[in-house]
Amino acid sequence: MVVRWLLCDMIEYSFRIKHKGCWTDGFNDVFPNVRASIIYSYLIHGTSITMIEVTQVEDGAIDELVDWLEDHPVMNTSRLVSFTSATDRGVICLEGDYDNDTEPVLNVLLGNSCFPTIPATIADGWEHWDVLAPTHEQVSQAHEELQELGTVQIDSLHSPAFEGMFMGLLEVKKAIQNLSSRQLEVLSLALEEGYYDSPRSCKLKDLAERDPTGVSTVGEHLRLSESKILKAVGPMLDHPTENA
Image 1 (cartoon, helix red, strand yellow):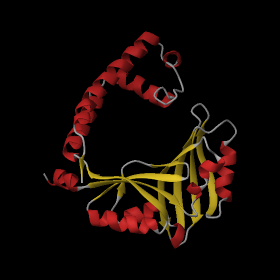
Image 2 (image 1 turned 180 degrees about the vertical axis):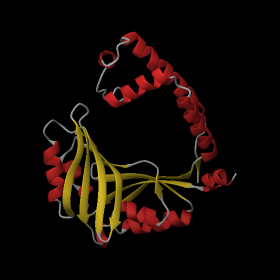
Image 3 (image 1 turned 60 degrees about the vertical axis):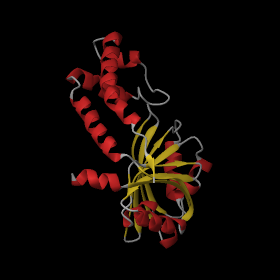
Image 4 (image 1 turned 120 degrees about the vertical axis):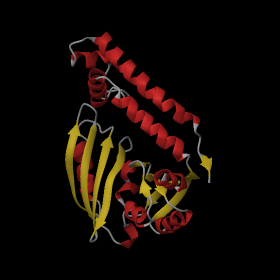
């Protein structure tokens, strides 16, 4: 199968970068407890459009954070899209002017056919990226261009066992489709209310207050849902990746 052949040839490249001149470089110096993820970022005619998600934002600090981002030398505007005080989670839209020295990392990656698998996270001034690339040559070219943006450290470079992972994801999808409507409803509520956050934003009794069936029934629906999904995930844990 062509799709599976292509997946098996892909290379997983994980790295961290201290991006000179970017807002990510000093973000945690000012907001040490806040965690940020880059949801989307792209350069269009010299202007970068970036969407970020921030978590663990203390009460009253979201406006300060938005203002700090807008005052950054490369930023034109910073706009709060949404904020949920119950989970201390917000989404911010950024627009900034970049030159060749501060080009968005994502722009370099996509230009070399390296595609992020999860949103990049920001911690202690480092951007953490996990990407897939078709060849070692494209990874090498992307790495050289990234070094022009800042300090780069490779965390891992390997060829994952994608065939087993691909089939495992199909099993996970099937397990989710096999959840009853009530199981899916309660599981969605738990995710929305932060039951699976770390630390948890709510307890079973809080979910039960939103559901008339009571704590024991809500807990049983969650346990059955977790059991079905985790049984589908289990075989994926038995397929370690092979070093490239």
